Length: 195
Ligand SMILES: [Zn+2]
Image (cartoon, rainbow, N blue to C red; front, side):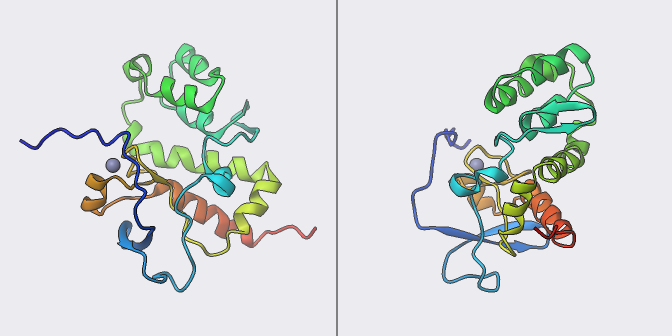
């Protein structure tokens, strides 16, 4: 039995880390120079890159509903129960919405196939967020060829890469949100409007 560790509140203030994509998973390596052709990665969706986060306020319409954040659109789709959907959607903040989406009430009526479909549920939502907010699309394109990684400390190795010691040592993360954003960026480059 290994001792139970509380990694939830653990934040790393150690040396900066960089990430290299390796056959679908992300391997974390200490930063030497750059291992991605000289282009630094964006490892946190905060500060000037907060617009990449699903918590960023950016109004858009999706399937006939206007959302204030992509988090709202995503969390709501965990269930087909109309009342629970309405309850999740009406959360005032993205944080509150995420809490409702992870609540027992939602889990009781959760789509059975949620874990198989959640990545594909996320993709068109994030695409619409950027398509309907040209200023954000421009900023996304301006990240150039930088690898986008949703670095977190809450053990989300599906949509992002958790940087806690435990997850770090496993060295495997899918970074789905980062990949979705890079795909959208790639498709948008071809259609950049001239302004
Ligand atoms: Zn972790």
